[in-house]
Image (cartoon, rainbow, N blue to C red):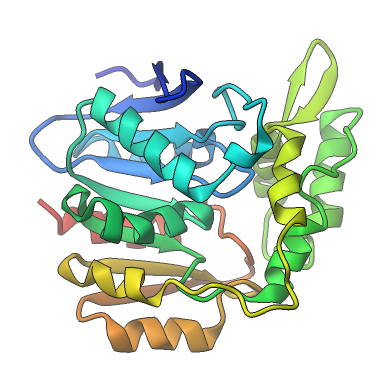
Length: 286
C-alpha cells in the first residue's frame, strides 16, 4: 500500500476537471469519503486519513474552485446543488457506491443533503461543526474573510495572518498546529503566496441575506436516521450552537458528539483525541 496519497482527476457533467485525493487502503470495508469546508481542500484530512487507511480506503475531494480542481468561470456554480452532483459524479467514477462520509462545515451540509438525494450512499456520517441550523453570526464572520485575504509574503507571515483572522476561534492551538493550519490555507508557487481557492467564492456569500431567517435542514438531518452520526463541535464555534446540537441528539436514535476544546469553526481534525473519537466511530461500521 502506497504511503502517499494519489491524485485522480475526473470530469464533472459540465466538463470541469475535479480532483480526488486517494489515500488508498484495503478493500472489503466501507470506504471513507472526506468532504471539506467552504474554502478548504482535500489536504485538510491528511492527518485523519493516516489513521484510517490501515483499515479501509480513504478519499477526499476538492470541490470545483478549490485545491487542485479547476475554477469555474461562472461563480454561480459554486452552489450546493451543483457541488452535490459533482460529488456523486466523482464517487461513481472512483467506484464508490457506499461510504462513511466525514463532512467539515459545507461538507456536512452535503452529507445531510445526501439523505434526500442519495440515501443509499450513506453508511455513517461525521458532521464536523455543522448542523441543520446555522448561526448568522458565524456566517457573517466567514463572509468577512473568504476571498478577501491579503497575500502573505512568507510562511511566517502566513502563520501570523492565520492567527490574526482565526485567533479568537482557535485559542488552544500549538505553534506546530498554527504552522500546519497556515500551510493548509495558503499555497506558495515560485515565491508567491495565495489562498487555495477561487476568490469568487465570496460572491455567493455576498448574496446571502443574513437579516432574514436562514434556511434549515432538519428534514435532511432526520433523513440520516438510518445511519449512525457523530457530531464534532468546536468549543469556541459561532456556527453550531449548543441548542442545535441538543436538538440533533434528541432527533437522532444513534447520535454521538464530541467537543474539541480550544477550537472553533471548524475543528482542524489534527489533535489526537478528536482523531481517536472519529477512528473509533468509523471502526464500528463494517
